[in-house]
Image (cartoon, rainbow, N blue to C red; front, side, top):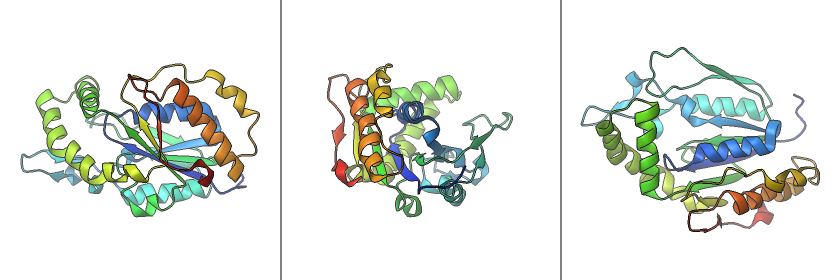
Length: 248
């Protein structure tokens, strides 16, 4: 891919179970090959390198639990329009065959994960920040279900992780970044599945990607569309905008 413009970097974070994956997928659907996704979750260190708590459980909810240097180096490659190949991290499936993923560079780079805004080297490069906010009890229920169904984690262990790892990390490393974000998504209820609506009609109207006009128009049109159709909680409360779009 020929490097023609400086990529636009978006950072996304939020509590475990808040719904980050849903919105990452929707962004990918809407922007297609104009966006690439780099997930911090794929950079977790192996079990033997994790910090063990006083109960003998590995704590994955610490910034030190991930290879931040590898993540940063791969991000720099994408910024330089270089293709990267990463090994997908498979939670709790230690004997599973390796799964490799090729990530092609794009003019929009979305970096997502619990600690993407906690690492200064990454955070300082972001042009736009999104915080997925969600009712804590709903996040807990989602995570508990996922742990048991997808990761075969016993219920008691999942409860221990939530109380001793997840929430302390959220309060210390994640939630403090909320007020800094350009968008705070109040994802308190289940999102609608028909986010496509009339967004397609905006694509042909958008100016060349990478320009400041694109950043104001194209990205904002996406979120305004999402606000109407998907980023709405069960009480009908809409997304909370915490910054002036004209500065994007």
